[in-house]
Length: 173
Image (cartoon, rainbow, N blue to C red):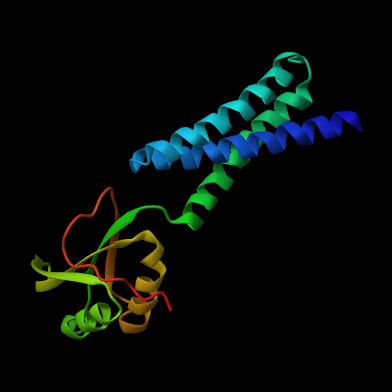
């Protein structure tokens, strides 16, 4: 029974420390240095604690398996956590088959800043809607797009920083 608790402790600790590592890395990429540094301290503490237990018993295959499975599971959990936190900004480009002027008014009515750019595609001239927003607002945008035009071509890009322009407070409904 003690072995199983030890394995569970190693597995759980690795999930926590690797999840923190994933979120910390994404915070660094987005320029949030102080939050990343604070998470790094916690991550290293957990990592060293677990590594110390493992290094003392390298001949215990169960510890190594729990350590490895915890690492892989931590990656999945970390990505899930980051997606739920929706840190940072995004830039979305939309090309719709419908009347884009109506969509622009709907989006602006919901507080999205929209710039319309003319583009040339396979089927001629198209209007490209360029929208900068907080990642937390992506689901709201997708909901609006689903109601307006399910066939719209949508690309989403990570954006490191947004400055200036027109972005009023968006309604979260």
